[in-house]
Figure (cartoon, rainbow, N blue to C red):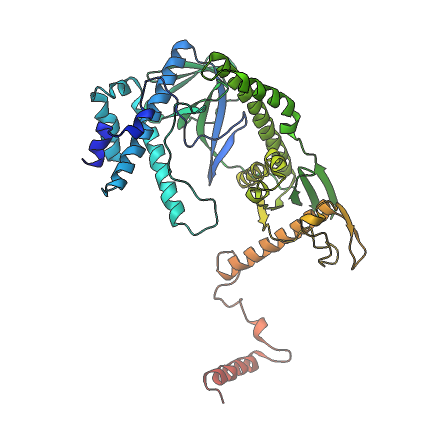
Length: 487
């Protein structure tokens, strides 16, 4: 039996646990944790953004969405099962077009999969594309020699997954209608009308929309739009940022015109610790409920609500701080800490609550969108140990001296605040790296400088003091003769 025939027949008991029932659960593979703020997906000459809105589907639309989520999950699992069967029996890797024909078009005509016809084919095709993307990322990760995090093998989706999604492209011909000033309706094929709150207008027509059902039961609509980049006005300020745990970040800012220096610290919000009591009580109540009961499902929702409040507050705080820093500076130098390594220490809870990676990602995205420069400094750069005055390595070192927040340089007797001194050194190192990059671009001929052939490139520089043009030419010929014919 070939791989595609296997995909049609669905043999093997190990996959049957994923294939019972129509109203099941699925999760999307490319949907990000978003807030009410636009999320940057890609930055080129134009930026790809996601605009997310809260939706309030009715009873019929909720049932249709559950049917769509389950059907997308089944198609995704069928694609993985078919490719796993082909790999196990040494058959050629099934292509996406072949899988689409076998798992969607022909499967609708079989008694086992005839209910796939009740769902939009666009959402099913997008689920198949998600499986193909998961395999491509996995193959690229196995061949890559970089130190980035490896991508695991694609896994089957379960009906018990709490987060579900389905994506519709323009091929589905979805429509967005404005009802009132802040109310709109999305019309999807074979689902119907879904009202949602239009908290901010869409800048352009959306290329796709993803319907998301979170673990707390809320439904969201995520629209993908393209907007043109607009460079912000120059502020003539540069800054160095030292992210940490004692404080959210320490910023050292310099005005390039007046040489005015300012430093400030952003306090740690500690959002998870603030809601630790509510989270403990909700999780304790969940553990007491009988498995499979409706009360346990309600208790699970209450736990998800607490986590959702923490997640949204953390993302909103990171958006606000990143936007303020980018708006007030032209060049931002920031340390690139190893968050994964820090999360494996005894400070893991504080590291996760701080969400440094999220803050650094937003800094980079907002800088690229507004035409600013965000330069990351290597994590092994000893920003804490270097004295920003005399550049000697006299600062605190290692975890043993982590509690030292103020120190005096033994070489120049300068008193330093640990975080402010690190931010100063990060800014200096970031400017040095930018200068090195600019010099490399000039050497490679990628900058608009006078480094090409021409009469004004070398004339005066080649003449020694007291020489005229003819003498300089003769000296050049003599040195060339000595190079070609050494004594």
